[in-house]
Length: 313
Ligand code: NAD
Image 1 (tube, rainbow, N blue to C red):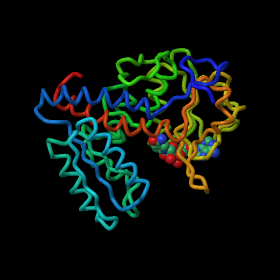
Image 2 (cartoon, rainbow, N blue to C red):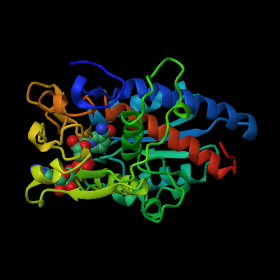
Image 3 (cartoon, rainbow, N blue to C red):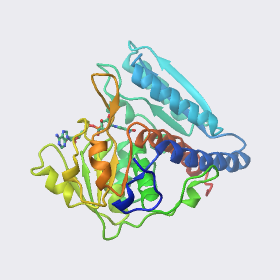
């Protein structure tokens, strides 16, 4: 598998390394934290709420916490037992809504049954929504108005910028070095239509002028629909669903899926080894979209802080 820095399938795909790109986000966010802290006399604050002992959730929360600390944010933690009542969890969220030092609230999903995640996401003050999942913020996304955007699609868009640029990521690269790709004239297919990923993903692509198709479990001829696209985003949850003959030669392939195989290894929704030879750029799993989701959560929190305090970064 060869690494390359410009696009075109002839010399192998450009591997979109989410870990390295997330370092560029960290440098940008750290600089913003310094600017903000000097203006408002405190660091931006992230509150992290974890309910129960789900091992995957604990791992995600730990990496978000680490990233926030590294960028200089203040963090607030609530680890609640799975037996927490609806009222107790609501009170924790309400407490952070009223805590002026908190700019971002992360409620790690899924919540243990019988708690309903969407009910509690709605309790988060929209201006403190770190994940960009509050219905008010999803409405603002549809309107194209400023608001926190869902982290995973936001991370995918930054990977797309990398895919379409000629920059080589280095130890001092920041997001300012990465031009925003114009998607005018490009066709994009998003496989998956969830609230969390597929739907907002499509609207972020549309915002950049791509011609977007949403594909899903009821789509007929999914391979044909994908083959027509310049950009394929897979957010399905089916291991290695997307095969080589689904992908137009030279297309950019962004794999959101995280699937655990029976042998314990992780894989995406794209059959990476099969597809990579025909793609111009592709994300690996793990090490692709996952680290960018974490980075964007912290970036959203800092943007929330700036917006709440009228600071232009
Ligand atoms: P979801 O289950 O809510 O939605 C899956 C979507 O895929 C649905 O809209 C469904 O219509 C569609 N679908 C299911 N089977 C299909 C098929 N055979 N053909 C076509 N479409 C089909 O899942 P989600 O929350 O959107 O997550 C999708 C994947 O992304 C999962 O693997 C999840 O673990 C992963 N994920 C990764 C990150 C990250 O940071 N990398 C973040 C969120 C989710």
